[in-house]
Amino acid sequence: MALAAISSKPRHSFQTDDKALEPIAAKVQAGERLSYEDGLALYRTGDILALGWMANLVRERLHGDVTYFNVNRHINPTNVCVASCRLCAFGRKKGEADTYTMALEEAWQTAGEGLTEAVTEFHIVGGLHPDLPFEYFMDLVAGLKQRYPQVHVKAFTMVEIAFLAKIAKLSIAETIDRMKAAGVDSCPGGGAEIFADRVRHIICDHKIDGSEWLETARLVHKAGLRSNATMLYGHIENEEDRVDHMLKLRAIQDETGGFQTFIPLSFHPDHTALQHLPKSTGMLDIRQIAVGRLLLDNFAHIKSYWQMVTPKMAQIALRFGADDIDGTVIEEKIYHDAGASTPQGLRRRDLERLITEAGRVPFERDTLYRQVTRSETTFTVAV
Ligand code: V47
Image (cartoon, rainbow, N blue to C red):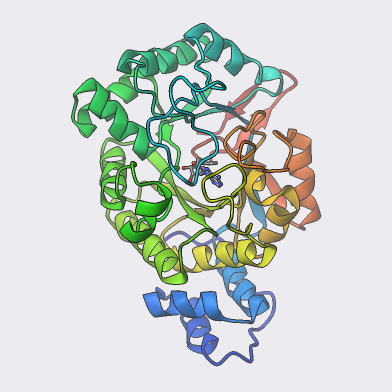
């Protein structure tokens, strides 16, 4: 699926001493699709600046200097989870000391606490709770819509949708229809981790497998909802697993066109069952953004999620292929439980400053990438 380009003028010419990059650069300049082997060569090159040049070329072709952010609030209704993923420091078994589950009133009230900056999106992700009924989740969304009808509800990962279908004894398609009826507007990209079975069995063995994740995404798109796609990197996966993961996403996107954004998530090991693993490094974070931009030629957006990689790295990523740094977030739990040292939220003006100082142009978007215009107390979305 071709994406519309807004600019095609490279700022400088391409140079590298890495012979393996030359044919890849020719393809990138001609707008041709990269192969599995090209993906591996991009991970293996020592010439990070040449890699960045190519990714930036694609980024500027699609978006010029425009850089997207949004004003959003995360809501994690419960940390009780049946899955016990080794990668996760957030989930707790039922009965453990520090579990929480928000009463519906509490969740609706928490949602409102972010509205000082006129939030345009609620991002809702939580544990797979063994006892909460399906209706809890539908009432949660319907109650939010009733109280904050102007706010886009981006809720439930593919993993949660499959779990909800199981507890409601519905098909995946029926579950998505019920979510839509309750007020879900789109879905977040979590739970994808790494699709390769070998890795998935170790980091998240009780989750749906990679093909179920992809099939659920296909059904979400078929039902007319957009979604995002993530990839968790920097743990026990290798370069082949990462390329395989991205090419599987690319194949679904060719079919549905329903993914909006690719978000590489850098693994935080603290307080997880994998805490012996070293943390990701700046070079890997930057390389991952660039490889994602180059392989996922049918994804409009590549997000460098500042919570994951720090605001400073997210800013640098805007020159290595990223065009989005996510949002204000307000209260992040999943990475902070896993040792993230970033702030739990940023103000709108902080995001604008990060973008402007990277020499880019801030563009406040809603979840569907439409421009948001603000007055003192409210916002409007260009439709
Ligand atoms: O699926 C869990 C990851 C994801 C850890 O769609 C961890 O706009 C690192 O998907 N270290 C949930 N990562 C978050 C997510 C997301 C975030 C921001 C924006 C969007 C979007 C989606 O977080 C999980 C898992 O892959 N995760 N534990 C950890 N220790």
